[in-house]
Length: 379
Image (cartoon, rainbow, N blue to C red; front, side, top):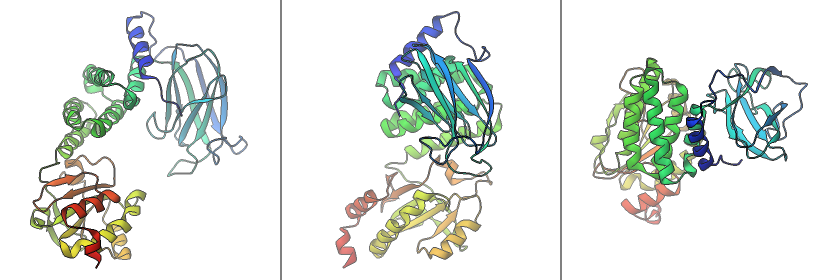
């Protein structure tokens, strides 16, 4: 997969802003097909278990196109091949799950092939066969901004800041009409900043939160609280955090009362593969360090208590776990902007957060630093 060139996208955006003939969302599509994937279709060359249909479209060098595959029956996936047969773009959920979207600036003129296929395995209501709509349009300004936001990891600092400012202005212009698309773009940008520039991420999350609060869609307005939580979570380093609740076996627990111990606060769920995959390492560290002042406080974000309660009983996990009830308006995961799991937060003996990603070898390193070498704990 090749990343979209950010500089070329910025240039294309500037040209479109100046052009009186800039493409609009309601312009005539370059291609529009209503079709259906069936068992009679060939299997895709890349997504081996998926059926695929191929469409040939002429692209002009220098023009940017938006390709959408929309379906209520399949988990859409798009692949784009250039005239030489090389894959230049691929997307799964860029149009909002289960829809796929590719925004691509053609670097040469000729016949491009669009492969309409699926993610590769039945998931929920979505099957390997079913109806879909494929459309190809000239990209509009919002499409170009979306492509820039998605490619922000390859941007220079100046390009990155320009994209952030343009996205904020776009959200302001939309006002109460902000949609899921814009929430996704904002999330993509902010989550990248968490890794690359945490201090900037805090301010960006706060700015986005204010803009989301203006949405006429209450669900999108609710993201304002989540983004405020994200800013709060990033600001935890060096500070204390509040976690209290009732454990799965009915006991009250408060992180503040565990002061004097090193505590791993682990946001997890039974349906999260990486969360389950980390449990053996957590168990190893717990067995080695618990008697020396290490505790784990798990926070399940499952939709209900039944799944974590059953899992806890079957695995006989030795640490306490609470269920985060997100229906009561006092959700821990919303308060700390938990948008992906596992989220293992390590708190030192003074009750101060020292890591927002304490898992695997990093957890072992931090425990050795704050408690002592693992060898001593196992003798």
